[in-house]
Length: 336
Image (cartoon, rainbow, N blue to C red; front, side, top):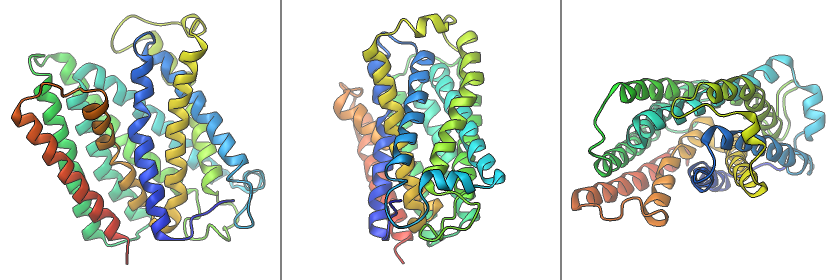
């Protein structure tokens, strides 16, 4: 299987993760004109699962180091398979709740709260499980990224002012908090199933990052029959949707959703591959800078802040400064 053999290459992989995690949402935006989120999400999950399988049969099966994918699956312990599978279930629940909170409370509230919580708690959980890097510099970097996310939230809120608070907003805040707490745990359950210190010569019963990713995506797919089916019947916003509507979608619409899942899956694969050299906490922290990548798309491509006043533009400038400083600190924390 392919493995990363240096910290510098691990950082590059983490940047790819951040780009992928921050960019897959563009496919949802493209499909949203004609396609409900609940229907898009099925394509997203199917794309994730298929791409995980392709990666496992290619990058996860060739080369002289580690264990090839099918051999690794055959020797994996039940406990490690269950841990990675549970990580997929937790991720799926958190992702659906975060989407619901965005619909109820708006992007400006849901993302800073949900992703900010996930970033802080997730780094603490992953560092406690597999300590690697300087904790002081690491958490300074995390604090700077959280500050950037908050600036982004305030700037978005200024663009959305006039939509007063109501019970839906309060419900959205609660859902964002629950989503953030859940999201902080999913990465650790998958990382715990892998032998992060010995990718070249893996411990018996433990998983390679490719096998772990495949099982994670299987957990997402299986749990989606429960979670997304429920949301389709009882949506947080709008009328219920049916599976019949899903099968009436065009091939292009389905492919756009699958592309979104594949992009997220590529980022997650690179994050777990990089974790062997960078450590789970640093790899996770860099990946969770994704909201800033999404903000770049929003500012420069989708023109979501067109016509913003001076204070909003100042907040965006400060956001990017915090973001760059935070990334530099997180990278420096693992450089020794």
